[in-house]
Image (cartoon, rainbow, N blue to C red; front, side, top):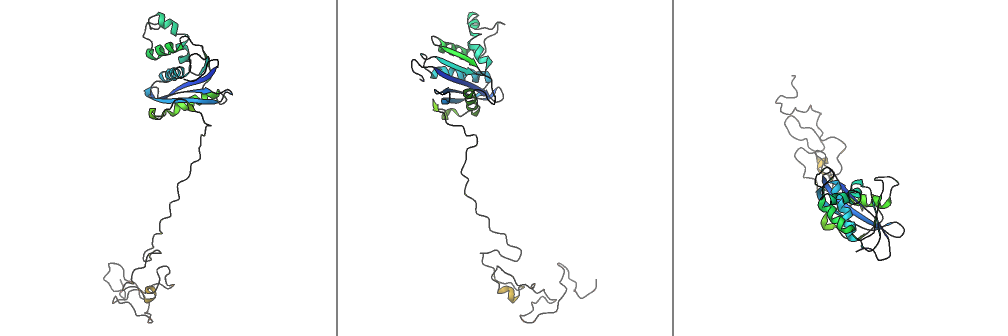
Length: 251
C-alpha cells in the first residue's frame, strides 16, 4: 500500500489497446515530491478494449494506494473519468442500466472501482493525451501501458528510471571473414596446394599455391602430351572441347 497518513499522492493511470479490441495493457505511476515519476506498475490484459484497459488502470491504482491519503488522479480518458464520476450515480439508481435502458458496459469493473472510491478523498483531473509538452505522469503511464509487459514480469511499485528510448547495446563480436574462394586452378592460402597434374608445367608444380608463374601454362599438343621442361613447344591452336577434328585442318 502506497502513501502515508497526512500526505497527498499525485498519480496518473492509462490504458492502451492495439486494435480495440486487441492486445491491451494498463499502467499507473506515482510522482515524488518534485512531480517526477517515482513508482509505477504495468501489466497486460490479453485481448481487451481500450475502455477496459483504462478502467483496469484506475482500479489497480486505487487498490495500490492508501485509502486514508488524499489522491489526485490524472487521466486522458473521458470515458473512464465520467463513468466513475458523472454517470455512476445514475447507473446505480437505474439498477445498473443506462438512460437508454441498456446494461452498463464493463459493469464489473465499474462496481469494483465504486467500492474502492468509498470513504476516501479522490480528485480526478483530465489531461490531454499524446502531447509533446503534455503531462509527464500521463505520458509515462501511456508509454508503460503501450508496452504491454507479460503478466509474469509485472511487479508492483517499480522504481521509475530515466527513460531511454534508444538504449546503447553492446555489439556482438565481429564474425571473422570467410576464407577467400579459390579461383579455378588456384587454391586459396593456407590450404596446401594439390599435387601437380599431368597437364601442369614444371614451373607450376614448384609453385607454393599462392603465386603462379607469369607465363601461361603450356597448352596440350595434338598428341595430348605435355612438353618437357626446357623444351618449349611451338604455339598450337587449342583443341575445342568435344571436337574430334585436328586443329590443322580447315573447317
